[in-house]
Amino acid sequence: MAVIDWLLDADPSVRWQVLRDLTDQPADAVATERARVATDGWGARLLALQAPDGRWGERAWSHDWTDTFHVLELLRRFGLDPASDAARRAVGLVREHVTWRDPDFETPWADNAFFEGEVEPCINGNVVATGAYFGVDTTPLVERLLGEQLPDGGWNCEVENGATVSSFETTINVLEGLLEHERSAARRRGEEYLLERHLFRRKTTGEVVDPVWLRFSFPHWYHYDVLRALDYLRDAGHDAGDDRLAEAMSVVDGNQAANGRWPIQNVHAGASHLGLEDGEGTPSRWNTLRAMRVRAWCATGGGSAPLARSG
Image 1: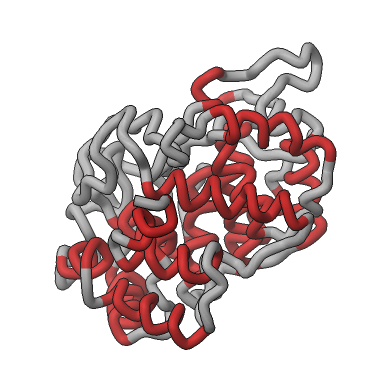
Image 2: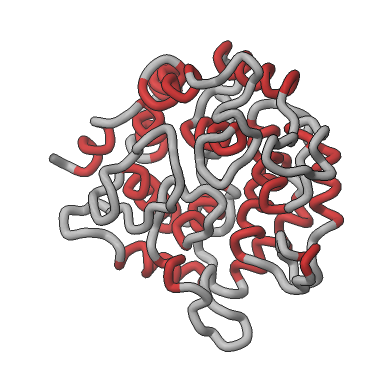
Protein backbone atom coordinates (compact mmCIF):
# COMPACT_ATOMS: atom_id res chain seq x y z
CA MET A 1 0.00 0.00 0.00
CA ALA A 2 1.34 3.44 -0.92
CA VAL A 3 2.16 5.58 2.09
CA ILE A 4 -0.56 8.16 1.34
CA ASP A 5 -3.16 5.41 0.93
CA TRP A 6 -2.05 3.92 4.24
CA LEU A 7 -2.41 7.30 5.94
CA LEU A 8 -5.88 7.78 4.48
CA ASP A 9 -6.93 4.37 5.77
CA ALA A 10 -7.05 5.84 9.28
CA ASP A 11 -9.08 7.71 11.86
CA PRO A 12 -10.71 10.98 10.68
CA SER A 13 -8.29 12.94 12.92
CA VAL A 14 -5.41 11.71 10.75
CA ARG A 15 -7.27 11.64 7.46
CA TRP A 16 -8.41 15.25 7.37
CA GLN A 17 -4.87 16.49 8.01
CA VAL A 18 -3.52 14.23 5.26
CA LEU A 19 -6.10 15.63 2.86
CA ARG A 20 -5.14 19.19 3.76
CA ASP A 21 -1.37 18.91 4.15
CA LEU A 22 -0.29 16.15 1.77
CA THR A 23 -2.85 15.77 -1.03
CA ASP A 24 -3.96 19.36 -1.74
CA GLN A 25 -7.66 18.51 -1.59
CA PRO A 26 -10.30 21.26 -1.88
CA ALA A 27 -11.32 22.99 1.33
CA ASP A 28 -14.85 21.55 1.35
CA ALA A 29 -13.53 17.97 1.22
CA VAL A 30 -11.15 18.73 4.08
CA ALA A 31 -13.91 20.35 6.14
CA THR A 32 -16.24 17.40 5.59
CA GLU A 33 -13.64 14.95 6.83
CA ARG A 34 -12.67 17.19 9.72
CA ALA A 35 -16.27 17.34 10.90
CA ARG A 36 -16.14 13.57 11.43
CA VAL A 37 -13.64 14.02 14.29
CA ALA A 38 -16.59 14.92 16.52
CA THR A 39 -18.77 12.00 15.45
CA ASP A 40 -16.51 9.07 14.53
CA GLY A 41 -13.42 7.37 15.86
CA TRP A 42 -11.05 8.64 18.51
CA GLY A 43 -12.49 12.14 18.85
CA ALA A 44 -16.01 10.88 19.41
CA ARG A 45 -14.78 8.30 21.92
CA LEU A 46 -13.01 10.97 23.98
CA LEU A 47 -15.97 13.33 23.89
CA ALA A 48 -18.24 10.54 25.15
CA LEU A 49 -16.01 10.04 28.20
CA GLN A 50 -16.54 13.56 29.58
CA ALA A 51 -18.41 13.58 32.88
CA PRO A 52 -21.36 15.93 33.53
CA ASP A 53 -19.08 18.03 35.77
CA GLY A 54 -16.88 18.75 32.73
CA ARG A 55 -13.97 16.59 33.77
CA TRP A 56 -12.29 13.61 32.25
CA GLY A 57 -10.72 11.08 34.58
CA GLU A 58 -12.06 12.95 37.65
CA ARG A 59 -9.07 15.31 37.51
CA ALA A 60 -8.06 18.61 35.96
CA TRP A 61 -4.51 17.23 35.62
CA SER A 62 -2.70 14.04 36.58
CA HIS A 63 0.47 12.08 35.90
CA ASP A 64 -1.47 9.89 33.47
CA TRP A 65 -3.06 10.95 30.18
CA THR A 66 -6.72 10.38 31.11
CA ASP A 67 -7.49 13.75 32.75
CA THR A 68 -9.16 16.92 31.47
CA PHE A 69 -5.93 18.71 30.58
CA HIS A 70 -4.53 15.87 28.46
CA VAL A 71 -7.83 14.92 26.78
CA LEU A 72 -8.40 18.53 25.70
CA GLU A 73 -4.86 18.63 24.32
CA LEU A 74 -5.51 15.49 22.32
CA LEU A 75 -8.79 16.84 20.95
CA ARG A 76 -6.89 19.96 19.89
CA ARG A 77 -4.26 17.90 18.10
CA PHE A 78 -6.97 15.78 16.50
CA GLY A 79 -8.33 19.03 15.07
CA LEU A 80 -11.80 18.96 16.61
CA ASP A 81 -13.48 21.97 15.02
CA PRO A 82 -13.85 24.64 17.75
CA ALA A 83 -17.02 25.85 16.07
CA SER A 84 -18.71 22.44 16.27
CA ASP A 85 -21.56 21.86 18.70
CA ALA A 86 -19.58 19.04 20.32
CA ALA A 87 -16.59 21.29 21.00
CA ARG A 88 -18.72 24.14 22.30
CA ARG A 89 -20.54 21.83 24.70
CA ALA A 90 -17.38 20.13 25.98
CA VAL A 91 -15.42 23.34 26.48
CA GLY A 92 -18.45 25.05 28.00
CA LEU A 93 -18.65 22.37 30.68
CA VAL A 94 -14.96 22.82 31.44
CA ARG A 95 -15.29 26.59 31.70
CA GLU A 96 -18.31 26.36 33.98
CA HIS A 97 -17.22 23.64 36.35
CA VAL A 98 -13.56 22.59 36.26
CA THR A 99 -10.98 24.00 38.67
CA TRP A 100 -7.48 22.86 39.64
CA ARG A 101 -8.71 21.37 42.93
CA ASP A 102 -7.36 17.86 43.50
CA PRO A 103 -8.58 15.42 46.13
CA ASP A 104 -5.08 14.05 46.75
CA PHE A 105 -3.16 17.21 47.60
CA GLU A 106 -3.66 20.87 48.44
CA THR A 107 -2.53 23.62 46.09
CA PRO A 108 -2.70 27.41 46.33
CA TRP A 109 -4.34 27.55 42.90
CA ALA A 110 -7.04 24.94 43.73
CA ASP A 111 -9.90 27.38 43.13
CA ASN A 112 -8.54 28.72 39.84
CA ALA A 113 -10.85 28.06 36.92
CA PHE A 114 -9.27 25.62 34.49
CA PHE A 115 -8.41 28.24 31.85
CA GLU A 116 -6.87 30.53 34.48
CA GLY A 117 -4.04 27.99 34.77
CA GLU A 118 -1.87 27.09 37.74
CA VAL A 119 1.83 27.73 38.44
CA GLU A 120 4.06 25.80 36.02
CA PRO A 121 4.67 27.45 32.62
CA CYS A 122 4.85 24.08 30.86
CA ILE A 123 1.27 23.37 32.01
CA ASN A 124 0.09 26.94 31.51
CA GLY A 125 1.51 27.09 27.99
CA ASN A 126 -0.58 24.07 27.09
CA VAL A 127 -3.65 25.60 28.75
CA VAL A 128 -3.14 28.74 26.63
CA ALA A 129 -2.82 26.64 23.46
CA THR A 130 -5.97 24.69 24.22
CA GLY A 131 -7.93 27.70 25.44
CA ALA A 132 -6.99 29.91 22.50
CA TYR A 133 -7.73 27.10 20.06
CA PHE A 134 -11.21 26.60 21.50
CA GLY A 135 -11.95 30.32 21.65
CA VAL A 136 -11.34 31.02 25.33
CA ASP A 137 -9.74 34.35 26.26
CA THR A 138 -6.45 33.38 27.93
CA THR A 139 -4.88 36.84 27.86
CA PRO A 140 -4.18 37.02 31.63
CA LEU A 141 -2.37 33.69 31.49
CA VAL A 142 -0.40 34.81 28.43
CA GLU A 143 0.67 37.97 30.24
CA ARG A 144 1.91 35.87 33.13
CA LEU A 145 3.92 33.66 30.77
CA LEU A 146 5.46 36.70 29.09
CA GLY A 147 6.64 37.90 32.49
CA GLU A 148 8.22 34.51 33.18
CA GLN A 149 10.41 34.39 30.07
CA LEU A 150 14.04 33.86 31.09
CA PRO A 151 16.99 35.97 29.85
CA ASP A 152 18.15 33.21 27.47
CA GLY A 153 14.78 33.38 25.67
CA GLY A 154 13.01 30.28 26.93
CA TRP A 155 11.04 29.09 29.95
CA ASN A 156 11.55 26.52 32.70
CA CYS A 157 8.99 24.91 35.03
CA GLU A 158 11.65 24.58 37.72
CA VAL A 159 12.25 28.29 38.26
CA GLU A 160 10.39 28.11 41.56
CA ASN A 161 12.94 25.46 42.60
CA GLY A 162 15.94 27.56 41.60
CA ALA A 163 16.38 26.93 37.86
CA THR A 164 17.97 29.88 36.02
CA VAL A 165 18.27 28.57 32.45
CA SER A 166 15.55 27.44 30.09
CA SER A 167 14.22 23.99 29.31
CA PHE A 168 13.47 22.62 25.83
CA GLU A 169 10.36 20.82 27.10
CA THR A 170 8.91 23.82 28.93
CA THR A 171 9.76 26.17 26.06
CA ILE A 172 8.03 24.12 23.35
CA ASN A 173 4.85 23.97 25.45
CA VAL A 174 4.86 27.74 26.00
CA LEU A 175 5.66 28.44 22.33
CA GLU A 176 2.71 26.39 21.15
CA GLY A 177 0.50 28.40 23.49
CA LEU A 178 1.87 31.73 22.29
CA LEU A 179 1.44 30.66 18.68
CA GLU A 180 -2.25 29.99 19.26
CA HIS A 181 -2.63 33.29 21.11
CA GLU A 182 -0.05 35.09 18.94
CA ARG A 183 2.43 37.21 20.87
CA SER A 184 5.15 37.58 18.25
CA ALA A 185 8.02 39.19 20.15
CA ALA A 186 8.17 36.66 22.97
CA ARG A 187 7.45 33.78 20.61
CA ARG A 188 10.30 34.75 18.28
CA ARG A 189 12.74 34.92 21.18
CA GLY A 190 11.63 31.46 22.29
CA GLU A 191 12.03 30.09 18.77
CA GLU A 192 15.55 31.50 18.64
CA TYR A 193 16.33 29.66 21.87
CA LEU A 194 15.58 26.39 20.07
CA LEU A 195 17.13 27.36 16.73
CA GLU A 196 20.41 28.55 18.21
CA ARG A 197 20.74 25.01 19.56
CA HIS A 198 19.75 23.40 16.23
CA LEU A 199 16.69 22.03 18.06
CA PHE A 200 18.58 19.42 20.10
CA ARG A 201 22.17 20.47 20.94
CA ARG A 202 23.72 22.30 23.86
CA LYS A 203 24.70 25.84 22.91
CA THR A 204 27.90 25.65 24.97
CA THR A 205 29.36 22.35 23.77
CA GLY A 206 27.31 21.26 20.77
CA GLU A 207 26.54 17.96 22.45
CA VAL A 208 23.14 16.31 22.04
CA VAL A 209 21.14 17.35 25.10
CA ASP A 210 19.11 14.15 25.29
CA PRO A 211 19.27 11.30 22.71
CA VAL A 212 15.60 10.49 23.34
CA TRP A 213 14.71 13.73 21.55
CA LEU A 214 15.89 12.09 18.32
CA ARG A 215 13.21 9.38 18.69
CA PHE A 216 9.69 10.40 17.81
CA SER A 217 6.50 10.05 19.87
CA PHE A 218 2.80 10.63 19.47
CA PRO A 219 1.10 11.68 21.59
CA HIS A 220 4.16 13.48 22.91
CA TRP A 221 2.20 15.21 25.68
CA TYR A 222 4.55 17.68 27.42
CA HIS A 223 7.67 15.89 26.17
CA TYR A 224 10.00 17.39 23.61
CA ASP A 225 11.42 15.82 20.47
CA VAL A 226 12.87 17.07 17.19
CA LEU A 227 9.81 16.24 15.09
CA ARG A 228 7.55 18.13 17.49
CA ALA A 229 9.82 21.18 17.25
CA LEU A 230 9.95 21.05 13.45
CA ASP A 231 6.18 20.67 13.14
CA TYR A 232 5.74 23.65 15.47
CA LEU A 233 8.08 25.80 13.34
CA ARG A 234 6.23 24.71 10.19
CA ASP A 235 2.92 25.66 11.80
CA ALA A 236 4.39 29.00 12.89
CA GLY A 237 5.39 29.80 9.29
CA HIS A 238 9.13 29.91 10.04
CA ASP A 239 11.51 30.20 7.10
CA ALA A 240 12.06 26.62 5.98
CA GLY A 241 15.37 27.62 4.39
CA ASP A 242 16.93 28.38 7.79
CA ASP A 243 20.25 26.50 7.82
CA ARG A 244 19.79 25.71 11.50
CA LEU A 245 17.01 23.26 10.57
CA ALA A 246 19.19 21.09 8.32
CA GLU A 247 20.58 18.80 11.00
CA ALA A 248 17.17 18.26 12.56
CA MET A 249 15.75 17.41 9.14
CA SER A 250 18.50 14.85 8.68
CA VAL A 251 17.26 13.21 11.89
CA VAL A 252 13.77 13.04 10.37
CA ASP A 253 15.14 11.50 7.17
CA GLY A 254 17.24 9.03 9.13
CA ASN A 255 14.20 7.79 11.06
CA GLN A 256 12.25 6.84 7.93
CA ALA A 257 11.89 3.09 7.44
CA ALA A 258 12.54 1.30 4.17
CA ASN A 259 8.77 1.07 3.53
CA GLY A 260 8.56 4.88 3.46
CA ARG A 261 6.87 5.17 6.85
CA TRP A 262 8.06 6.46 10.19
CA PRO A 263 7.74 4.23 13.27
CA ILE A 264 6.58 5.10 16.73
CA GLN A 265 9.88 5.13 18.61
CA ASN A 266 8.98 6.17 22.13
CA VAL A 267 5.66 5.61 23.92
CA HIS A 268 5.48 7.73 27.05
CA ALA A 269 4.40 5.76 30.10
CA GLY A 270 1.02 6.44 31.64
CA ALA A 271 -2.61 5.33 31.42
CA SER A 272 -4.51 6.58 28.38
CA HIS A 273 -8.06 6.39 27.04
CA LEU A 274 -6.86 5.49 23.54
CA GLY A 275 -4.20 3.35 21.92
CA LEU A 276 -3.36 5.43 18.87
CA GLU A 277 -0.54 3.23 17.60
CA ASP A 278 0.41 -0.46 17.80
CA GLY A 279 3.47 -0.03 20.02
CA GLU A 280 7.11 0.99 19.80
CA GLY A 281 8.78 0.00 16.55
CA THR A 282 5.56 -0.28 14.54
CA PRO A 283 4.62 2.08 11.70
CA SER A 284 3.03 5.29 12.99
CA ARG A 285 0.50 7.22 10.97
CA TRP A 286 0.89 10.25 13.23
CA ASN A 287 4.68 10.36 12.91
CA THR A 288 4.46 9.67 9.16
CA LEU A 289 1.91 12.46 8.63
CA ARG A 290 3.99 14.97 10.59
CA ALA A 291 7.31 13.92 9.05
CA MET A 292 5.92 14.12 5.52
CA ARG A 293 4.43 17.55 5.97
CA VAL A 294 7.62 18.83 7.60
CA ARG A 295 9.60 17.42 4.67
CA ALA A 296 7.20 19.07 2.21
CA TRP A 297 7.52 22.38 4.07
CA CYS A 298 11.31 22.25 3.84
CA ALA A 299 11.22 21.20 0.19
CA THR A 300 9.05 24.15 -0.81
CA GLY A 301 10.74 26.65 1.50
CA GLY A 302 7.39 27.98 2.65
CA GLY A 303 5.00 28.03 5.57
CA SER A 304 1.83 26.01 5.94
CA ALA A 305 -1.82 26.15 6.84
CA PRO A 306 -1.97 26.09 10.64
CA LEU A 307 -2.61 22.67 12.15
CA ALA A 308 -5.08 23.65 14.80
CA ARG A 309 -7.57 26.24 13.72
CA SER A 310 -11.16 26.28 12.57
CA GLY A 311 -12.02 26.65 8.96
